[in-house]
Amino acid sequence: MPQSVSFIHLDLGIGGAENLVINAAKGLKSKGHDVTIYTSHHDPKRAFKETTDGTLKVVVYGAWIPRQIFGRFTIFLSTFRMLYICFLMLLNSNVADIVFTDQVSAVNPFVRMFGLARSRLIFYCHYPDVLLCVDRGSWVKRFYRYPFDMLERYTTSVCDVLLVNSEFTAKTLRDTFPDTKQDIQVLYPPIDTSAKVPAKPPSSFPAQLINHSYFLSLNRYERKKDLALVIEAFAEYISTSKKSSSSPFLVVAGGYDPRLDENVEYYAELNKLATDLKVSDKVVFIQNVSDDTRMYLLAHATAVIYSPQGEHFGIVPCESMVVGTPVIAWNNGGPKESVVHLQTGFLCNKRSDFSKSISRIVGMKPEEIVEMSRKCKDRVVNHFSLTAFANQLNSYATK
Image (tube, rainbow, N blue to C red; front, side, top):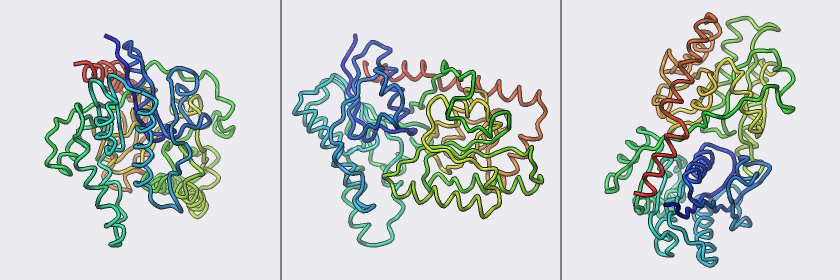
């Protein structure tokens, strides 16, 4: 039976968490449910097209609330923004049969208290936030974070269904909150296996890459993504292979938000790093790629270099493999569950392995590349398809 579904998501920009929410909303809508996404920020110029072309209904509450104040108070403002969304939903009688929340668990008791979910509350934990905040050097910061950490410990399990994005995250969640009594279910983020790659380079595709090989890094401009590793590994490969006009390029592309000091600062740092390592003429930086350009970049890359270590799941490796492009990633976290070493790419145990993996892929025979590409596509279709995701999520929503 079709039901009404409300998604409450903090910031509907471009990223892995947003991609999962979009696919979850699309998956439930494909099952006949009436879906609405509530968020505190939605910029049509920096958002997935499904949120701007009428595919999904988006309601914005609290766009006036800042993400940070002088680069601080992020968790406080994130919690306040989510609670404000709930309050406006209550005032506007935005009650649904099912409510899907993610990222900020503190909102869960209020969804219950306000009666916003008639039937079921589903919480998707991308990763415990208490572990994401590593800057706790001062007693002031520890004192500030303490109530939010305790709130997360309690509210994570205040739901009917507790979902995580990988077995890695499930184990981490159990270890972090050992008193959680709620069963933890793994629901892998999905990939749209029917997505089409543009036949021609989109207008925003860098001209210097046309008819030229390149490696691709696709991640937000955040230090925790360790994009410096990609540039360093590429520079090491170039130095050992003797740079020439036929040498491949490196494309560093991803989400960039000028509102965030870290994005602005890290982007400048990476540009300087490429200059210092004498590969700036071979490194192309792109901010906020469009969907068409993203697909074209992924499909025509020699390989995707995925640099985050201990990543909770990581959707980019699957996005890469679905179009037949192998992945170079760390041998830990989510990529251990998505990438098969030597079959769909290379898993690295130390930083020096990244440059060696670049060399190995460049040196592969054409028939080896074709076979690896086939295995990449099969891996995603068999384990991470949107259909399988929608069926599993729908079972949690309606049982």
